Length: 338
Image (cartoon, rainbow, N blue to C red; front, top):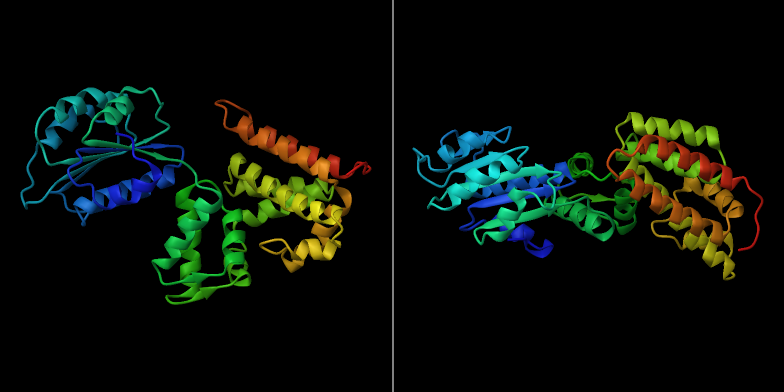
């Protein structure tokens, strides 16, 4: 059966009588994290060889044997399969036709919607199929806040919004950055925007921010340098597109406020999170170069960039570099209209 987003945490915390949990989608870090949660719900000690078996490949020939093996120390067993695929469908179907208390946890990043394995899991009442896709916006902020709450750490809203805007689409990378904040703040601590910036100042997100600001003030050389640095640090083209889109939306909100009569300074102060004081000059310069209509057009082109980067076989790196160049060129064009 398919599991909706509201029920995921409960299912992973208490698998109950489930026989198999399939974790599929694009976020490999989230898939791995949820697989670990499901496995530890049954066997808290994952290094227990009598209760936990980890298979690095499909290993269909071992599945039935492991499902019906008995734990010498008692308790339910877990079979944790990484890189699962359709070759598991037949042996899993056979296993499900017989009684067993073993839970099979399958990581299957990139599994097609019409795959035989996914169809089997979604149709079976004792199985759960959970989609794992990159979080963004409020969902991402909620996840970050929850990770920090678990460590008794509070974070200011402005700091949370800025931090979320700097992160890429992978859950493992997000958790790594959150762990930096945990070490920085200490249990019971509180994080301000300045704290967060100081803590992750060397993260790839700063390179993305450099690229966005440079492109929107027409600094082609600076934008190219920043984007190459971000790519060298492992930032995905999709993360680049999202960072650019976030920056363009902030510029557009401020530009609309200015068109409505606000001063540039007031329009910038009203943004949440506020413009970092070291970036105010560049942000203000961009506002003087861009019109509301051009910002809207650039945002639509950036959305198209993200869509194109998701296409199989797309030259995503080339598309990102070309888009950065286009933004920088547009910023240098004479202003006309709104």
